[in-house]
Every structure is written in structure tokens, then in C-alpha cells.
Length: 192
Image 1 (spheres, rainbow, N blue to C red):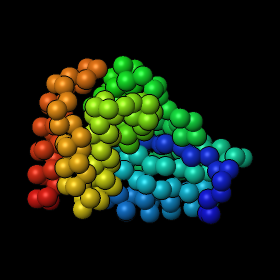
Image 2 (tube, rainbow, N blue to C red):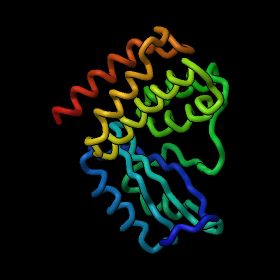
Image 3 (cartoon, rainbow, N blue to C red):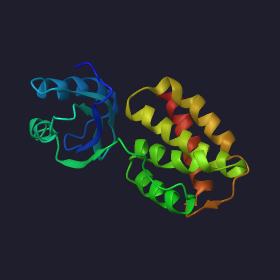
Image 4 (cartoon, rainbow, N blue to C red):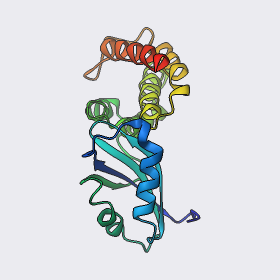
């Protein structure tokens, strides 16, 4: 399918009931496309976490998404189906950060990235740097979920530099713990 400007974009999260790994993301993309081959739409950007298989679904304005979910029912139960046409979240870090942290804990790293972009755009100074560090950390995890490891070490390095000098806790997010997690992830991603 050729994507058109008026196509709608949805985030779909299916339960990872087969315990698939990120290394299977390309295979999973082919499988999802094959199961929905007769439907007018396109699947892109498969991300695999221990809990879910996430994907971007593009469909025309007229096309309902329920037939896609029915075609994929043996792959996994739908956990999240939401349109990505509107700007998500609040520009207020006090609102966005706790939601982003909850998504981080649920391995919903793409959504973390998406939620934090709104307050990042409105922020200034050190707070803008910290938000960018969180966004880059989430983006690194997204690339791991897509089995795109090559970019991860530099993203983590940049994320850590953005978080340098940040406070220990930021609206309930333990940034010291976050930095340590990123350091471990950076070491692990270079040894994979």
C-alpha cells in the first residue's frame, strides 16, 4: 500500500504470548503483513518487548481497524489500540513525567518518547536537557526492541551527557537509577 497523507496511523500493542524476542522483529513484521495481506493498510515499525509486540498500522480514513485485529488474533490479544494523529500528553512535566515513567516500567518505550516530546518542546535550560536525555534513553530502548543495536551505544552516550548534573529525582522518576540502567544497557548492547 502506498501511504497517503490522509491515512490514519494507529499504535497497536499485541500481547507477546509467543515470548518473541527483538531479533525476530523482521520475521514478525512479515508475518503480520501476510496475515493482513488482503486488507488495505500497512504495518511498519515492529517493536518487541517481553510484554508486547508493538507496531504502527496505517489505514485509510474509510478502513476500520477491527479486521486487522481479527487477522492477528492468533498472534496476541490486543493490549493497546490508539490513534496517533493527535499530539499526546501534557506540556507540564509534573503530569507527563509520571505517565512516561509508568510506560517505561511497562516497556512501552516508544510511548515514553512520544509523551516526553510535548514537555521537551516547551522546556528550557537544564530541564530541556534532562527531558532530552530521557527521550534519548527511550529511543535507545526502541532501537533495541527493533533489533537495531548499532545506534544504541551513541544514543546512550548522548542521553547520559544530557542527564549529567540532573537532580536525583525528577517528578517521581529516579534519575540516578535511570542513568545506571542506561550505563548497564550501553555495556550490554556493545557485547551483544
